[in-house]
Length: 205
Image 1 (cartoon, one colour):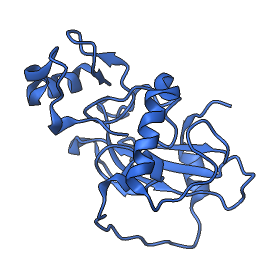
Image 2: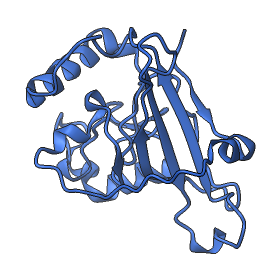
Image 3: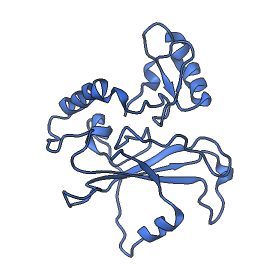
C-alpha cells in the first residue's frame, strides 16, 4: 500500500486528546545527521524529515491568507505492535508565518499531517542499529539515488513537495515560485547551470 500523509481533522484532533499530558524538552544534538529521515526524529524547526518520501501533500497553505505554511515540528510516535500498520508513525505540524492570521479560538493557521508505515516497507530495513550514524545516513542517501529515484522530490528551500523545477538548469526542485525566487536571491543565481550548489540552502530530507 502506498504511503499517504493524511491531514488530521478538527474532530480527529479532539479525539486524540487524553487526560494524560506528556512534557518534552528541546535538546541540542551532537550529530545533526540524527535529525534526518532515516533516524525517525522528533524535532522543532528546520525542514521536515519525512517518514515516507512518497505521497507528500501537494501544497500546505494557510486557510486564512492562502500563503505557504512553514514547518513547525514533528513527533515520532511508533506503535509497540510489530504487526501494526502504524509500526512507524510521525505527526507533522505546519503553521502560518503571518501573525494577522492568528485569532482567538481559530486553528486555520495550523495544519497537521499523520504518516504511518508497517515495519516492512520500501524505505527502511526491518532491523538496524543507530550506532553507526554516518554509515546509516550514507546508505539511505545511496538508496535514495538508486531505487529511490522515483521518490518525491523536495523543495530546496522548505523541504516540502517540490513539484516545480528551476527553468534554467532543471536541476533544483521547489514547491512554489515564491521559494524559487528566495533561492535565486540567496545564491542559486551564482551557480545555476554550473553544476554547483549554494550551500546556504542545501536540501536535505
